[in-house]
Length: 205
Image 1 (cartoon, rainbow, N blue to C red):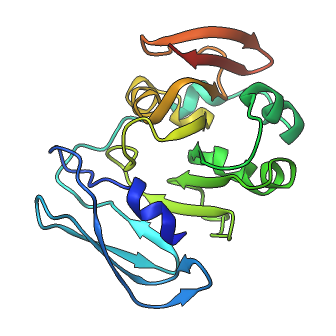
Image 2 (cartoon, one colour):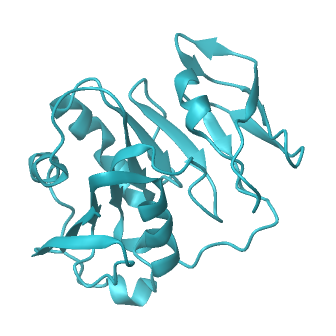
């Protein structure tokens, strides 16, 4: 996990947002490979192991995923150039959140969008931490502070209302959310911009 992401994290327990306190173990450059994050509100601690922050195992109820039966026949994932155009990001800086299998887009997007750090939430096992990609594991929410992301991409298996509400919560006003499921039911507060080819694109009002 990139050390500067620490100030954007939040405890997944259901209390007010508060900055987490980090105790670092191993670091490689600006990436924290091992350590502990502690919450000053509820005193819970979350380990960082092999660069991945494990927020799982809390008291919250795991968010419901999309019914896997409904994913049959889902179109192939969009290419990086298409995603870049849909996200409508200009200039470096800030964070793009990739939920579920959408974390697989990080490397290709980073090649097109320099200077942006990507945050993978519950990424598949084949996705590894990189200098451009921090990985967070959490089943109950997106463990990031409100309105911190320049854009969010949600994988098809996470295109359920609870996960989409979380995606909206962390998205900055006027920024875009891309859902890899054109049939997704987007939460109130998103203005639909485009639907088709397996994608739903909206902007936070």
